[in-house]
Length: 153
Ligand SMILES: [Zn+2]
Image (cartoon, rainbow, N blue to C red; front, side, top):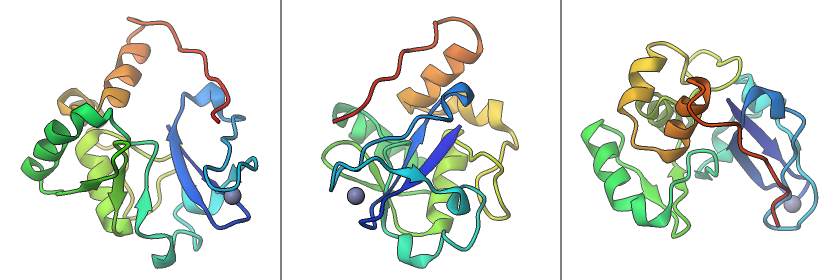
């Protein structure tokens, strides 16, 4: 599941976490305060407005070494995407984010109209090169145990 977070300083981020980790709150990368759930954005509400973009996504991030391969995948699926040097994709609009998530089999909790939705989710997850998607798939299939989550610095 993609969970989205906001901070009082204006920072926005999102993370892929299993459903039983919904209480987890990341630390803000800018001011180090604990972030809060951005429910409005998760539900496709008014908080997900144009001012949130461009948005860097931790949730869909890949290892920096995998950026060239992932970029090739993105282009082949009609969602050319720029990445930070940390391997996080930069979404330029809500539509770009929705298309990217759909191509990679990522979807929001309670996806709203126009957002990536669980339609054809298995098929999308099967073709995704995103290591986080592949890990989520392996966990769901019971092939690997649920990883432990730790606080990030
Ligand atoms: Zn902050």
